[in-house]
Amino acid sequence: MERPNCPKCSHQKVIKSGVIDGRQRFCCKKCGYHFSVKKLGKAIDKYYVVKALQLYIEGISYREIERILGVSHVSVMNWVKQYKVKAPENYDYRPTYKVLNHTELVKFMAVKENLMDTGMVITELGDKFMVIKWERFRNR
Image 1 (tube, rainbow, N blue to C red):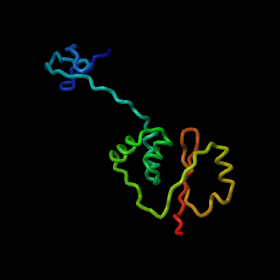
Image 2: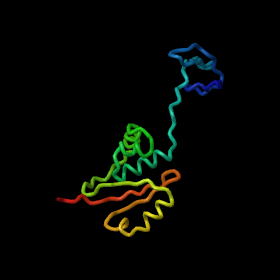
Image 3: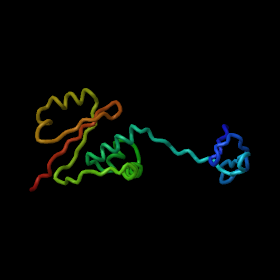
Image 4: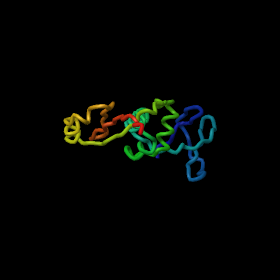
């Protein structure tokens, strides 16, 4: 195990000084400061953070983003708060999405009806593509 530097004085000479709650404690030889090494959390690739925020801005719910990307909806909520992202408040439209591979996307784009009367965004999603369409709510 590599010994950490002192967080108080950044000195490199530290010694082990017991274990508390299963975590190794250290003592700095220079300033005498006692500290524990912080637990490293599970890191999520920034690609998924950006994609989750993009989908949120497009009007897709937290739970749908969870299903699409496989990332917890709570993580998405935390990223939205952390980066202060605001979703547009336009309730006249409802987003729908499809995840397609390249050949399915080409076939989808070849049908003229798929391109009419809606707004659409196509975004990369790993080795596939996501087509997000907005359809106006119909008054009945």
